[in-house]
Amino acid sequence: MSKAGLNESRFNMWRAVATMAHADSIVRPHEVHFILENTKDLPLTEAQRERLAFDLRSPSSMQTVFGKITSPRDKEDFFHFARALCWSDGDFDESEQSLLNHLHGLSLTGDEKRVMKYAMAHFNEIYIEGNGQVRDPGFMAMIRTMIGKNAA
Image 1 (cartoon, rainbow, N blue to C red):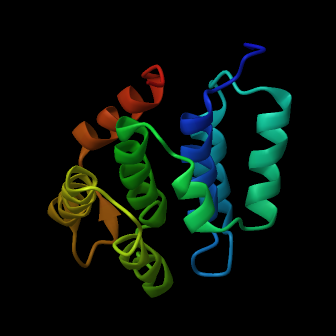
Image 2: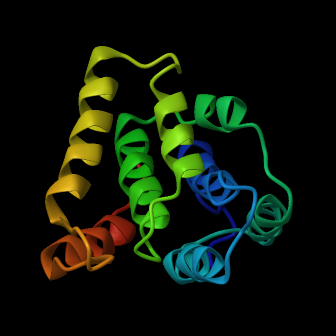
């Protein structure tokens, strides 16, 4: 494991994803599993792992954590991971939709707003209504590829 850990932008992207798990006021086992599974091979320092664990127990301010994501690619990845987390059980709760709607109110550039809209639209296209499942293996491969990318 690297002693340097993830850079601040990438680390705060994961903190924002952990904060997203609190959107409906209940952190469910599948949400914890999603975050643990997707961060297990990342070069997090022990302090970063402890902070993520704390963020899963006690939510941070989305405005504060999202504001610390400085890389455009990390912001893009956040929108994708947030949507994947919200749908990881096949159920997109109203509270989680409300939090994503709240993200529209953050200080986003035009490019960041387009990326967020793309991420939301992409999920709408792959979700099979009535079945409660995401059935796009290409999308899951894309998520795994994103996880393997080095932070910018």
